[in-house]
Image (cartoon, rainbow, N blue to C red):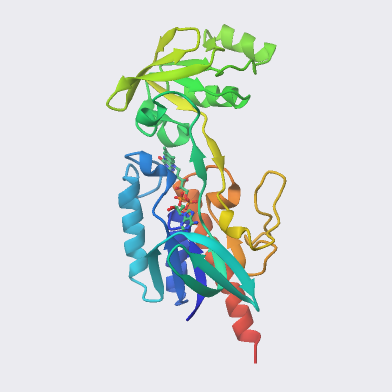
Length: 301
Ligand SMILES: Cc1cc2nc3c(=O)[nH]c(=O)nc-3n(C[C@H](O)[C@H](O)[C@H](O)COP(=O)(O)OP(=O)(O)OC[C@H]3O[C@@H](n4cnc5c(N)ncnc54)[C@H](O)[C@@H]3O)c2cc1C
């Protein structure tokens, strides 16, 4: 069987695309390995009608919406390779292989945490990276901002809106310029330039940061930097063009230089956004993909 589209990734981008493909009655396969990066947290915020929902319930509801449409199949598997021959894509997974006219990559981001002892016990519970997602829940607390880049000033401006007090940790760098240092001094915001070695606390609630000079600084929560990239190992057989940043080069429809190969959601941006952005982009990209199919079908003999 040749699917009209294969979607790799069953997060909000992939499932929103799948919903649209289902409603367009296109034979579609969603392949997802059930490993989203937001599985570490208990609540997702800011998605209209779904505010504070657990990430797993959000995905279950999204998958149920898609199940209503017979044209779409959803399977649990991991894509490891894609080849293209004679206008068709051959998608290999760990367990099988599938053929499609088009492929949508909606695989999100690969995330890794900074090397701070015990951070994994608190990340997603009282330590986050996105104040737009979790700032409200962390309101009126003493919050650490841990970031070794100039983005620390940008975060300071946002997190100040929510916090009782902010404390900056540059994690071993001296990244701030004189003007920033003076501004922070004027606002009586403390800065620590030491490396952050560890986090202390219990039951997911962080209570202190341990610095490499032996000092412990009490806090009630933190916004930390994390590392992101895209895990596109499965594209090794295709000559997909990338920008210098590593982002896939795409046209205004989300199509790569390989005709029929599209990308949506965070894997398109190569940067973190929010559920609602990923879902909106997945839905729009599916419509662009279907339009390409309709054009071809309508104009062929
Ligand atoms: C701690 C934390 C808190 C967050 N809080 C919020 C919040 O409150 N509000 C909000 O809007 N957003 C929040 N986010 C961000 C949100 O999770 C992302 O914006 C959103 O999930 C991105 O959607 P996506 O579909 O692009 O990718 P994902 O949701 O990451 O989905 C990608 C899917 O692709 C699958 N996949 C990857 N590679 C393969 C492969 N080779 N084969 C098969 N499947 C594959 C993965 O398993 C995953 O299921 C948070 C994120 C984190 C980490």
